[in-house]
Image 1: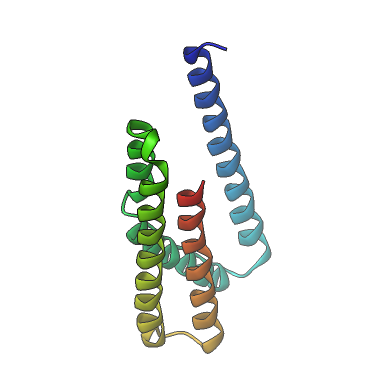
Image 2: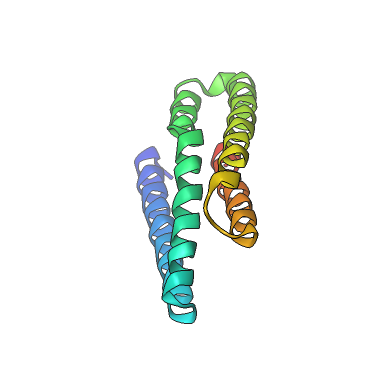
Length: 133
């Protein structure tokens, strides 16, 4: 297979994966919205937005930088990946500590606060998936 064919195949596969993932997310949000009350959906939306904000804060484009550096210097895979994964763990722990500090001050029930912490951990795991992927 030619390099150009491989690139086109990978771009199409990546686009399909992003599209399918978006459709699954849309279906999940619609399902949740139809099965809970308006106030419960508002709480769900807040928790999701709160967690995704901190995921994006932790990532800050590091996954894209890692991909670029590995493409430019494939011979230094072990060094680059080792440094990046250490940074990913450091950033995710720091951001999770920030979440732990902020959540007690939210004006919600204990259940919602615990769910917010759990969603923070879950979204930060996506940061790890992107780094390891």
